[in-house]
Image (cartoon, rainbow, N blue to C red; front, side, top):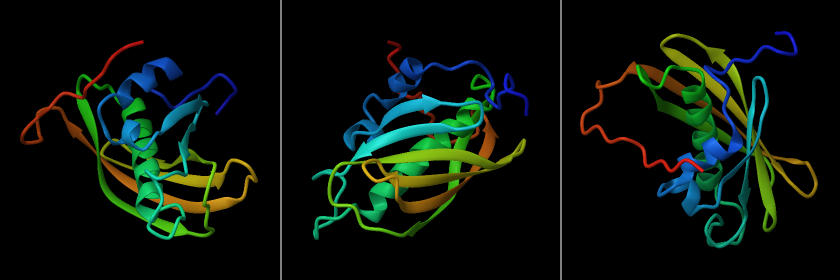
Length: 159
C-alpha cells in the first residue's frame, strides 16, 4: 500500500464517525473516535464507573465493546453501505493487564478484508503508559442490505 492508498470505501472524517455514536452502546460507555489512518481506526474509552467491574478494574466486556465498535465501524468503512451491512459474528479477547483509571486506546487493523468475511484486530493500550491492556479479534460477515430481520436504520446525526 502506498502512502496515498487507503482500504476505506470513501473518505471518512472523524466528525462523521462521531455521528454514528448517537443513542447506542458506544456513547453509553464514552467511546470517542480519535484517528483514521489509511488502514486503521482508533478510539478512546474512559475507565470509570461505566466501564469497570465490581472490583474497580476495566471490565472485559467493556474491552469487547470497544473492539466490537471499532471492528464493526472499520468493516462498514470498507463497503458500500447502500448495498451491504457489516455484522459481527464472533469476538474473542485476551485481557493482559488491569487498568483502574484514565483512558484506554483501541487501535483496530484488518487481518483479512474479504468480500463476505472480514477479521479485525484491536490492540487496547493504557493511554497514560502505552502498555497493552488487551488484544481482541472480531470476525465480521458482510451481508446484503435487507437480509436481516427487524431491519432498523442506525441512529445518525451528521455534525
